[in-house]
Image 1 (tube, rainbow, N blue to C red):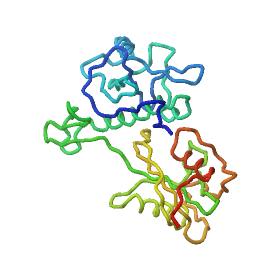
Image 2 (tube, rainbow, N blue to C red):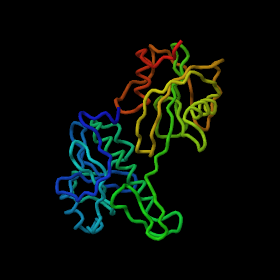
Image 3 (tube, one colour):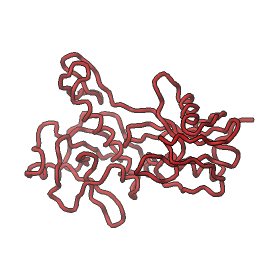
Image 4 (tube, rainbow, N blue to C red):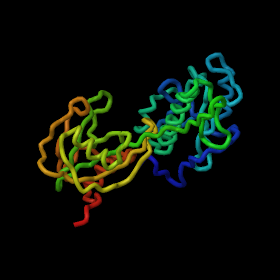
Length: 291
């Protein structure tokens, strides 16, 4: 999946690091990230020394103290966020690509980095001012946290829990398509955990709301961070409980259909938890409920 790096891991512990010339910088403009695309569909992000040069041009916000914010480390390389306004890039080999497009490129590592950086950037952008008293916030020196110097309010990164649900009925899997535009592939049922409910209750509620079915025998499978939406996804398999007539919520889904194990209409992309769960069911390797 997305977070399965070739070796090592994404070190998400906050560090109070000064940027070095060869460290990587993630530059974001609106909902796009600055990258250099290779002929092999690979991605390269700029280094600190390049961004420092660009920041001297007219198109970029001037370099200033705290222009770069440490984000995380992958394979011993530090990643920083450019906190200013990038604007158009002076280097024509780089271009801004939509953040949601990174899942379709070759490198899972860069996809993971971009999605995580986007998650952090969105949080920083929304946490510049205190929601309690309205004062400008500052970054804490020891933790990944925004602090209000006036009222002492502490603001940590927002992570939204959500579920991915594979509803099964013997050799059949329930698959759906979203009603919203922009993504037309098959998917599994999904939804956010609401305040005051467990993730297991979320599974039951989302299945009932979206397709009008009851389920039983919930089996947790695996989780995945999905930074593009600020989520942590928790995957569950469950069995149909009772009749199988689908009552579709057309505000959420364009369709929902049963598909047999040997003829699933979508393949694993090596990125998403959804696709891995579909492949696992197709191979007959989904976790089974004890008899």
